[in-house]
Amino acid sequence: MLNLRSLIGSIAVALLAVAAVYGVPTAKANVPPALTYLGAFLQNDNAGLEPTTDAERARLRQIGKTFIRELGESGQFRLVPLSSGQMERIAAGQTPGECGQCEIEYGRSAGADIVAWLTVQKVSNLILNMNAYMVDVASGRRLLVKSVDLRGNTDESWSRGVNYLVKNLVLPARVAVPPA
Figure 1 (cartoon, helix red, strand yellow):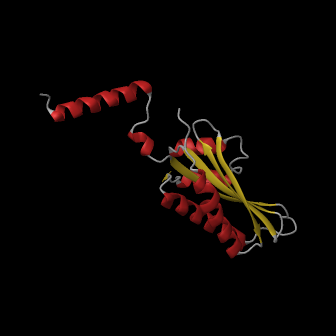
Figure 2 (tube, rainbow, N blue to C red):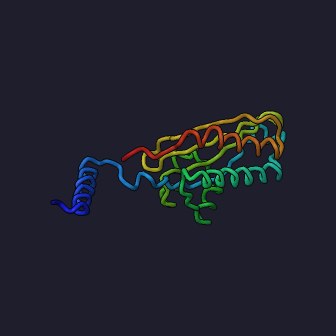
Figure 3 (cartoon, helix red, strand yellow):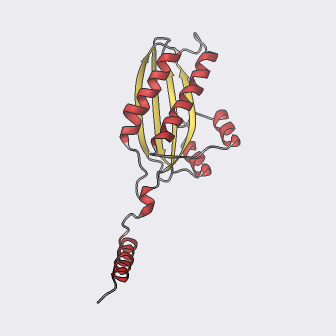
């Protein structure tokens, strides 16, 4: 009579061999993708008439903190921080998504699978648009582009906008890195 333990062990070894040969996902499939957040950026369409305010700069920082906190708490991503040098390069350069794929290099240097950033387009103090972007570092393919419109340029409208964006549009999308 066969020993039950050795039979179970043999079956497990055979299943792992089949998984390796046929590329069946194993435990790595349960590891969330590494995500690097590049920042929040303002496009002020009327900067000549209404310059960007300190309050708007503070709102950009706050929505960034909220965005990354909620992504991290979701368990859908492993957050990979940027070095201070990388953050300085991003701040001094063009906006991700408008820079000839500089965001891919930032993601590679951070060891991320996905890069993410936010933009806020200020059309006026009454009309703003908040956008979230995610890009696959390996392929350069956009994985997610989601947007919400804001009415009013206040702390409350920006806060509600980013919360709605993450909870109702970004997280339900279940962004994942495509298989290689």
